[in-house]
Length: 334
Length: 109
Image 1 (cartoon, rainbow over the protein chains, first blue to last red):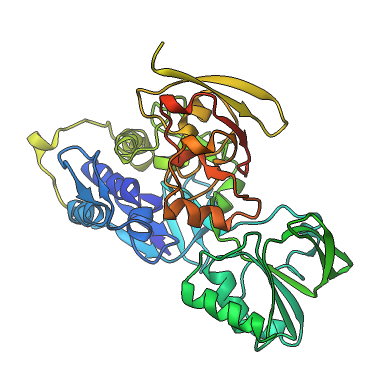
Image 2 (cartoon, helix red, strand yellow; image 1 turned 180 degrees about the vertical axis):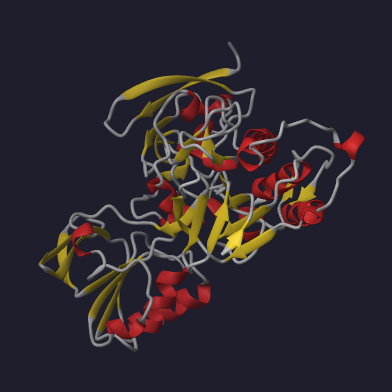
């Protein structure tokens, strides 16, 4: 088991800066993030984009900001668990917490700080009649094991890279593959799209463009998918498995189940110290909400500083917090 | 006044409300919808990443700048997008957009 003072969920810019502010108050931090590297969406989604509203930097690239923050917090020796999603928080008898990861990592801490940004990216679901009824059985939001579809009639929906790639791949595995896309063309990689057009011409797959999904039909097991074409005419496509691949959208994930007050996918906090409704659990950065909330990195930094002032009493219950400027006191490494 | 336009916003239940929009402070349509207390998530804060600010342009499409690749890619992943779909976070309004009519379609979870 990993032991630390503060466990920070999310290693984006705000989570990283919380390490610095905590370090000034002699509190140690461990960070856990579902992504395989630190930096959150800055490193994962737009590492080369310039950011213009970081004080002191007229412009700085997203990845460079993360690199510099890592340098800034190095004296405080933060530890990391990367590539693992937090599934559960369990409260201990003395009030402290165990943070439990999806691969079984357990982190014992006095305070939990949720700096989860947009949350976890999960598959986007289409609004289809009867969809939930067949989830986990005949409806699959990702392809984990292609063999599962061997000699089956499958329908794939979507127009992005993963829909195109799986259509090509599963054509050789499944008995019958139909790709349904609502528009007339694909925006996915041109090579993959070309391949799909060719396979459709050769009769290796069925391609239905400009078709919309309406409902799933079946009796216990999926039997068919109801569609409409551009002229709004209905048809039913026989199918044993349905694989909707509509990309990913950010969701709170397991965080929604921790008893925290949630408003529109964000965690409600008290702006005094960014505490949630649950003692010892704080939320900072894009994942929280309060009147006037702005989703800015800058605001997240401010929230991290105030959070540490509040968290101190749980880490050092017998000590009085005295506020010191780094200009006076310097940065005292661990 | 010169720098205020009026747009009409239809919610998910079909109720239509007119909203006055100042055009001199460069707000996105997503920010305008949030400020006028329309129910949208806008989880990603305007990065064209979550598509929860998905709107249908009912009239006035010709006055909008064409979507960029990132917006088109995101729209393309939406099961319920149509040719008149846009992401409100990528739309910035000017005086020539007076009378724009939109319907909110973005997911609420």
